[in-house]
Length: 142
Image (cartoon, rainbow, N blue to C red; front, side, top):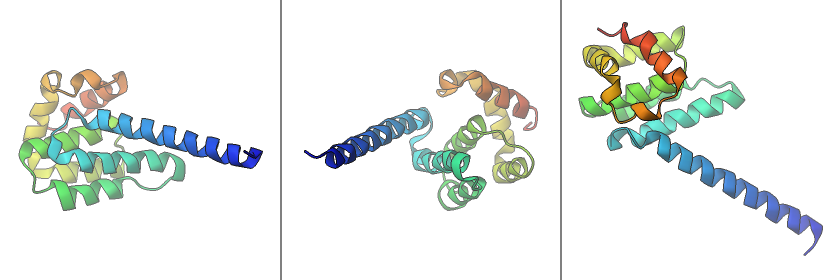
């Protein structure tokens, strides 16, 4: 096999390996949340990750997922979507405003969820930064 073919095979193998690891990691991130919102959480997380490289606005994807797939789900599924978004990114300025508007009528229930966060199945997967985000936001939703 020529050197070019070996390089191409190696590059494709690396891409496949990285893609497989990323897919596995994403599935592990969404596993503790309600199954009905897994796809919406994945789409939002992918937009968040992509924005790190492209500078694109991931919050557009967050709102689109909410309006088209999450808004009419059960309260538990909506709350899980909100929590999944909250623990992954800092919500500041316009992102915070969009997030609060999105939570809207579910703010009381979301506040309860944040105050009782240690009983949520996803809690043990949260890192220190995620817990810090929850602590900052829990007083905003009463």
